[in-house]
Length: 47
Image (cartoon, rainbow, N blue to C red; front, side, top):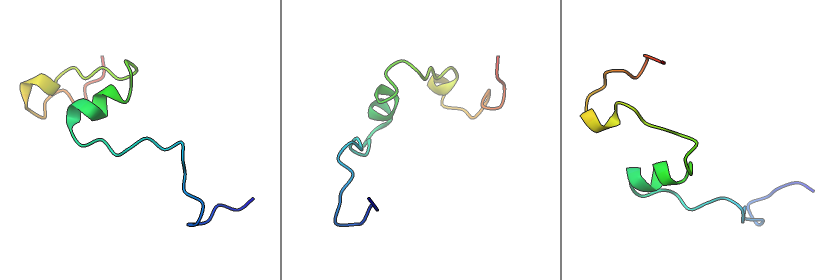
């Protein structure tokens, strides 16, 4: 069955309004490491 605009996707979670909501949506699968520094360092450094 083709999906049209008349058929809303019910299983899609609401859009996160804050970073806390965004991180909470991962439910522990995503662990930010350098985010508390407020700097862009360590983004491409995967350890």
